[in-house]
Length: 224
Image 1: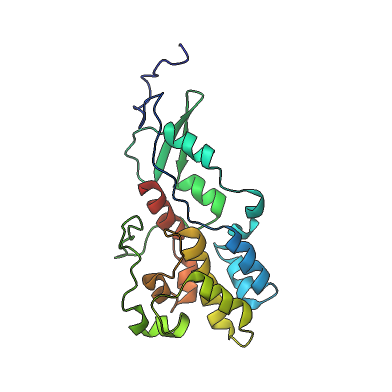
Image 2 (image 1 turned 60 degrees about the horizontal axis):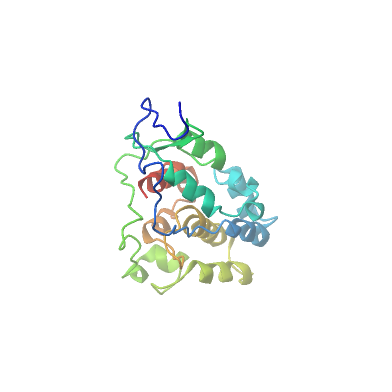
């Protein structure tokens, strides 16, 4: 088969062989936040609990040594195949199909990739209004965990986590988890802010740690 010939055994590509996506890549996740959380919580009960959960493997990722390769992602997007499999992306590399699915995502991240609880509906973080927090300060749990303002950023919470040495252990783990979630796993804005629906879930920290965040993140990743 010639180098530029189309392999008819595979689904058609999203882009033709000599065509490429033009839009810029919006990658807002900041994996270095994991190193920050590790540094601030080292030796604490809060970090020990996070480390033993499905979030624990995230701290094994060499984040400082693995900067995002925009060229690699651009190349993979250029070779993506049109498929309808849920939570699955297929690419062509050297004429061979490569799969990135929920299974691979779970293996790499260690996140729980089980089924959503009954009645849970995953949000679409690609919507422009997905993270609007108007009125969040009226929520009792928001007031308890985040504070009295709507426009709090993850950077604000990180500063408080680092410098408030009188903070009780329960709130420390709650802040650490929302920082990881909205700063690394589901970051969808240039300025990271806590998401109200996830702050509300922190009322049950054990349930939060057991939640299938792998499916939640994979859903938004594949839908992007």
